[in-house]
Length: 263
View: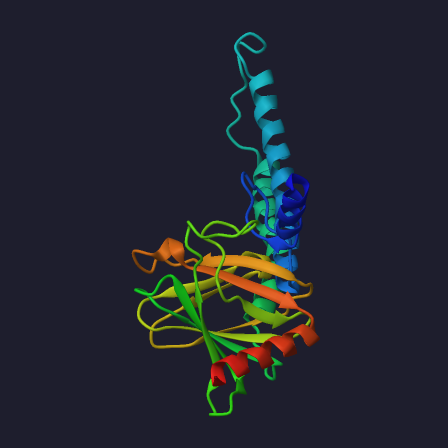
């Protein structure tokens, strides 16, 4: 029984992308957008290491050669044309190397698909912070109503084995893997933010307007996120769970949801 429990726990956690205790890095990328963010972070970190090594070497060299015991009468250097040119040009060139890939990434993140395969609408609520209503606008039931459902937080005292505390919901946002999706995010009252770290998406919901973002999940799995805008007293209880499945499983899920909504 113990081995079976551990096996279930391991399998459940292994298939989920969520934050881990004492985690320092980013979550594994599930979309090309998030992979680009991680690659840009690594590239910028490379430049930071070079700057750290260069500045540290100059500091140590100055402390070593210009101390009272080694050099009691230091030279009085007022101007250094060469070093001034170098320290002016290098800090100007380094941001250019950082800006070129970052602009390309920002442009790809801001681009919205003209003809996406699926459109999903997320609506934020302040005083219903334990739920996130979702609407699949591409599917209609027999009474011409779009596929809609509420996603409620699993209470702290009622989680199942392997479920993350305050991150699991009763109805997940199911999407097909390797499919271009369009997310429409809008609030019903105050500002919210629909954020899923593994997908590289953080879309603010501003009152009076609808913001768009594109997602293309490249692998199957369960991805956890939360509202990233302080939206009320229950802001901490607003999880977001996206489950990527195969296209066949997604079609079966949509059919079942339409039948349940009609009944």
